View 1 (cartoon, helix red, strand yellow):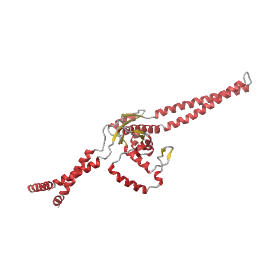
View 2: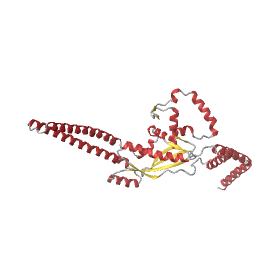
View 3: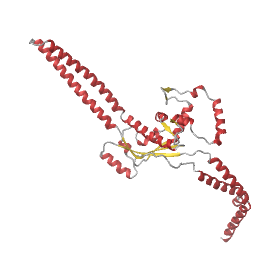
View 4: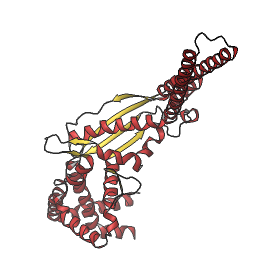
Length: 355
């Protein structure tokens, strides 16, 4: 046992002696690592983050929802079993990968904190993003290579009016959409269905503005989905009511015209025709009243189906940048350089011990 201890002490002493002999090399390597790390990380543009938290509300309560709440306290989610919607909160992050959801975000108007830039988000991403100047030669070379293999169809996107068509986009627009998808993320707490929207951007005001706009866009998207059938019913019953009103007005006009034309006439045929027109007018009135009631019910159904969202955490303009963590990066690189250098100088000693 003592022999093994002595051997370990000898190996440790040899390692210390080797590292002491290489002290100057360590200083040079760490100095070079420090300078290179600073050159790499300090030109990297700073970015900010802003977060919004939403809690979807459900209009009606039932015993099943009470059971779901009890199950949620134990970490089980039964809401999806109760919910008949195709888009429920756990699927909201999937929406943030859909072009139909992302492309309308390009139209959001943003303004930088210094007031120098005011544009829609598409132009802001395309023209006003800061880049690391050290990567300019690489980006220029990649751009030249891409142009060599770029076809005419790659720069053309089919637009609907002035908007980008999410069904057919150019490579540049698709690239911008992918960049936006990385900046705008969504997550859902499975226990309580709280939706968190996090936006990352190089400008603090743009970051907060976009976070609030994405929240509103998500709410509108879900509301339009949840109420689409009810709104179609409103349009349908509105058409029926308008048609019934026209028929009722026509029946009133026929009845009035007939009565005015046959005043003081006591012929049974005239009385029968008048009664028939009166009955037809009453039927048209009943139809109009019935359809009007169905229209009001359909409008109430739209309000009933409209989901509500409680904003738990509103977006704020961030005061401090979220990254990059420059000091942490430099410290990590120094630690990594120290470890790699140590392993390199002790490689022979380590190999001799293993053999």
